[in-house]
Length: 94
Image (cartoon, rainbow, N blue to C red; front, side, top):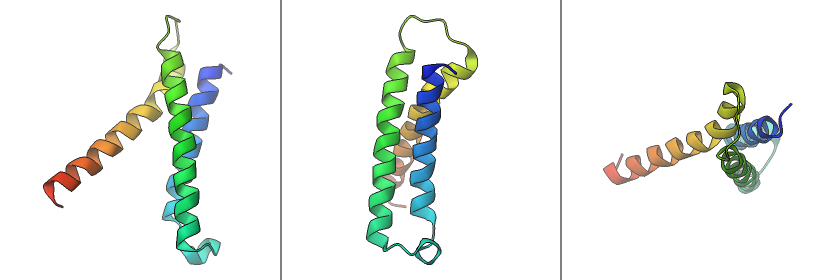
């Protein structure tokens, strides 16, 4: 497996873990809300760093296949879409 695929997949994994750990009810995992938020933010940060690394390495002049390009560039695009969505919701007051 290509190193860019591994980085992209790891980024998706950590972003998904952050989403799941923040969405689980506290009774299911017996965490306090503060520890659930801490774990979610740590997972998001790791996923974002991995997404940035994969995206920057995919921009070099390599010839990549479609799956590798998707796994290397899609996590950062999803993060950007999510940030834009929450920014627009905050600006419109919803």
